[in-house]
Length: 480
Image (cartoon, rainbow, N blue to C red; front, side, top):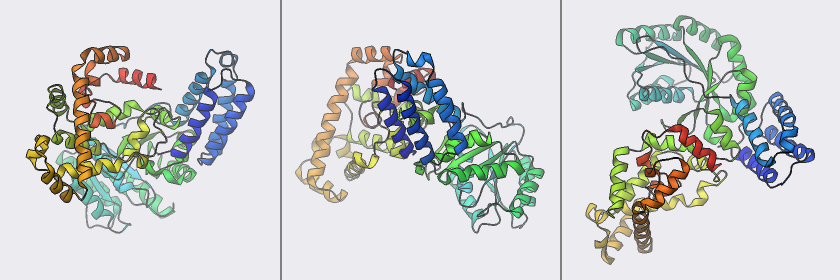
């Protein structure tokens, strides 16, 4: 995700931070590198000029040049400018209350991921306590209606579909159906084309007129760079967009679309698609994305992701087990599975401060899969008491998991070390309290050092429930 531009900006920041003083020449050299990085990222030329000029103007100020730590000052200027370019602050959907219907109109070209984005948005709204209905009004692309039906069934959201070939009629009838059946949010999946044409626009204008949507969202492929900006402008001129959803964000190494859209169109990016799974759909936070681009990580998003996937009650039980030295291979297996639920490992690594640009494939993530297979080849009795796993059992487990006896031995040794370490950490309350007091967090934050905690840099899921986000943001700043 944004690997190329992140690598370049991280290098620029390291170079400028290593200088005891910053001169105008240093600033000009850094800004030249920034300009080239943005152009290579396929950022709109107007946006690049504006970013570069405002950065130079502020960075050459007397306050910065005479600053005690000019490197940090310059980084702060870059961060602020980047946040401004991405949209200043997070924007929410403007939906009506649950007693009144809200219509969301989904627009976009064919292949942008509109139908997939519609079902991901519906799943998010269900989590938020809404009662959505998906309306299949893409009657152009073969199997689009069937695709939406399958996706809707997968997340338990009904899909309104008719045999009629009139998309405008279908949209209107979907609204009537929703009113009769108490659905408070209607998401209308419309037809796209390979390129913008009059026929498509005329149909969309009619659908908008009969449905009166509160949100008109463009679904754009982030990998198309500046093309996404041109597409957004065309749709906005005729339909009046309220926001943008960027898909395939996890595959976008450059970031041209994200960095250009808000400045050129004035329309906020509301969500980003970060993978193929239903849950790979994130709210777009300009400040957090700016932090990732500058190689500073994103601790707050990481913790929020953990909150969504971890059962707090189970995590609390695990914490107590660790304190009593009762951690088992079954518990380790559950921790592996918890990490997998959090989604794409590369995106998780990118959120950890100082880990940006590290390739997940180089971190032996396959080792976790191998260990998972080994534990799954054990009986429940063996998982609960690893001491009974003798030579004959190890051979059987290795054969069942498609690994070697050496691999099984390695896992059991690793488990013993993890168990010992977790016992020490969980019982050393003084060390935990001192560390957490310095960070302004409760002592529970440090308790889960194994399994998921190890994979995520020591974050303990049991303490995430109800944690003050302001304190997490303060922690993120300290880690930067």
